[in-house]
Image 1: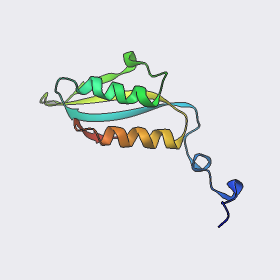
Image 2: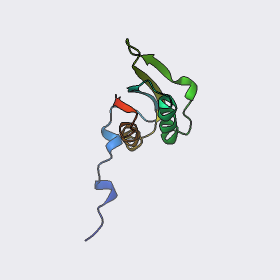
Image 3: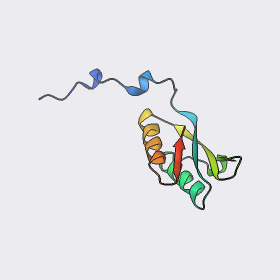
Image 4: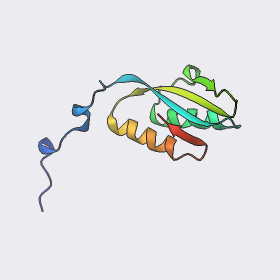
Length: 98
C-alpha cells in the first residue's frame, strides 16, 4: 500500500479560525487546593516554552471553593492546543477547561 500524498492530506491549521502563532487564553477551573495553580502553570509551560507564569490570572468562586485560572500561551498549531487541552483535562485537579 502506497503512502498518502502529503499534498492530499488536509492541513487542520488551514481550516482554523486562529492565526498561528498567536496569544491564546485558556480558562481552567478546579478546586482551590495547594498545588493546583502550580500544576496548571507546569502543564502550560510543557506546551509553550515561552509561557510567562506571571501572566496567569486567578479568579476565586463566590464561595471560595473553586478557582478559575486563566493561562495565556503562544498557540503555534492546532496539534499543540489539542495536546494542551488533553493534558489539562486529564489532570486530577482540573474540573473544567474552556
